[in-house]
Amino acid sequence: MARSLAALLLLLVAAAGDSHAASPAEMYWKIALPTSPMPGAIRDLINPASSAGSASKEDTVGNVDRAGPAPRQAYRVEAVRPVPVSGGDMVACHGMAYAYAVFGCHTTTAAAYTVALSGADGTRAEALAACHADAAPGVAEAYKRLGVAPGSVPVCHFLPQDDMLWVRN
Image (cartoon, rainbow, N blue to C red; front, side, top):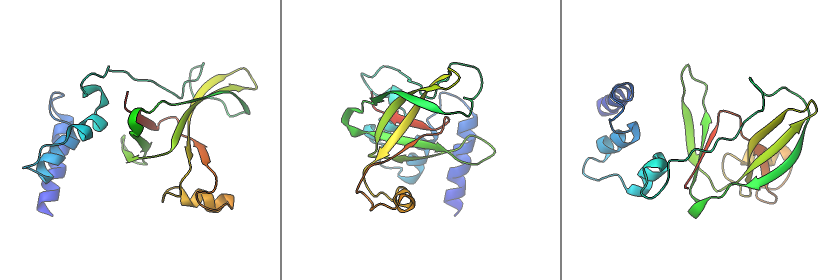
């Protein structure tokens, strides 16, 4: 217990401190496995811009052509484009209900798409959608609510505006 508390405090202090410090995930790795270096593949998933040969590129989805949130109204799907995923590496991060920014992240095999939308009032927006073709634990409830057998058909949903999808570029 004391080791876990010390690790947590170290992460909090480093996160608030110098921006040149190792990431909290790297520090946790050093505490949990002090004799094993963090594999490059894991470091690349945590910080894709640091991987060798990759450009620091950030694509944003969830854009709306006006200030503030998109108005609640009917939207028409104008275009759907698959998100290219090199090598199948993809991590989804969902905002959690805390007083500060906390995300729960997990790997996923879902297919991801950017969806161009147009509203009845002319508002244009772009959203991110994920389609699950398996019966993963987090998706099983969706199959149950839809009344279909798990894994029998893809189940698709839009990601909330503050969620993130990390893919290797």
